[in-house]
Amino acid sequence: MTTLVTGARGSVARGVIARLVAAGHSVRIASSDPAELEPVAGVEAVRLSLREPTTAAEALRGIDSVFLYAEASGIADFVKAAQAAEVRHIVLLSSSSVAVADPESNPLAASHHAVEVAVVESGIPYTVLRPGAFAANAIGWKYQLMGGGPIQLPYPEAQVASIHEDDIADVATAVLVAGDHLGETLDLTGPESLSFVEQIAILTEVLGRDLPFVAVTREEALAQLTNFMADGYANALLDLWQAAVDPEPVSGTTEAITGKPGRTFREWAQARRADFAIA
Image (cartoon, rainbow, N blue to C red; front, top):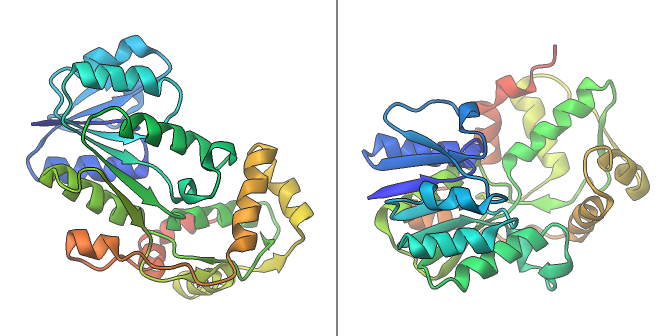
């Protein structure tokens, strides 16, 4: 049984690859530029670009299961190639943003929703993973500090149950190996809901230095966010934070599937201390 892991440069995909290989499973990794992938002993790296349908057939040759990163471009052709290859299970890394009332028109959700629909309607057995905010999103604060200013928070008390990327990899691997949870959509969160202020307080304790922050207006935050993302995406993200006035419900999915409690934000911060080094 061989698993194709797409989006192999991503943190979750790398975690899935490492776990499958450690468990003795056959793995093939794919990227639009496989030369940029970190070599893994005994693992074949192949070229796969969903924007180039002709690359899918070879990447899927002899594949039983797929860990699929949600990329809407070319998903219809990829699904057709997976059907032709008689793939028996797709585990899709989607997003909790798809749960909004109108995902087709929401910039955060639209691409993930399109891929979910294509996979669900393909007839191939599937499992959809819908993680919420990644704990690793906090690394973005480092770059604000490197720019010489404090962390800008438009909604300091917004609540998120951020998930450690290793928990997503644990769940994905368990589902791929067992071949279960077919036809299910699994909501994934961390084990606790924290405000952004509480996350910064934890980082301050772990790093042993102050992380100054300041509350800013929505307009100020929008001007900062649109330096590196489209206006629609930035506004949708701000809408999400604005609405997050209550603690985010904790799913408990990680523990239910892996038998281990989800990693806390503090555990993530302790493991990623080096990422917050500022030269």
